[in-house]
Image (tube, rainbow, N blue to C red; front, side, top):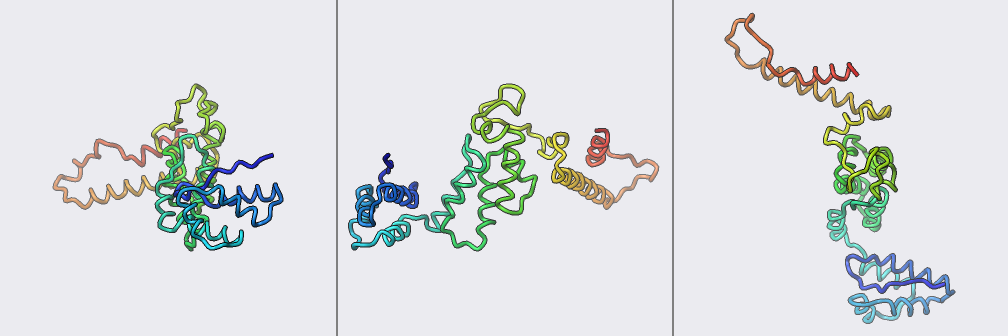
Length: 251
């Protein structure tokens, strides 16, 4: 049995921890000592990582691991840049995307790390998943991930279907990238789930429409009107909120 170890160059796309774990796997498999592990790691460095290694003083395996991560690990400024660029791939599951973000922030000392993760996670989600998760208003990173997985399981037929574009959730051949109707997600879900959270979402949506309608009424009422009271007529366009509530009552 052999352990495949790719050479580590120290580029921004590489993870020094992954390299070290691979070397330690070989170390354990072949019962190497620290000196043998150091020699093996040195043979699998290249580019600027090898240049850095060649100017180091002799060191223990433990010190080498810390020094390599300190030199080629993700700095805070690079971490934010990487988080900004990292978005969910077309065939990447919600959980895999979340795990990738956690890997990027593994050395962060940010006291608000969970809020940071939630922000970048939601910003980088695919558009269909993002629309749904935003309507749920998750307060934590894990809650946002759970909502994304719920959408994936309910509307995309699970992780395997989301990754492969399986048509099980569509009843016919699915498009290359499954897309929900462009209607508001809460309305799409109105007849598809008995989830109590969704019920609250619908009520909040109705309340928002009522508030909007009331503001329009107050704005119109504040304008001077010289017409006699008995000549007043309602606007041609019916109340959005009342129409919406009437529609909901009929269902």
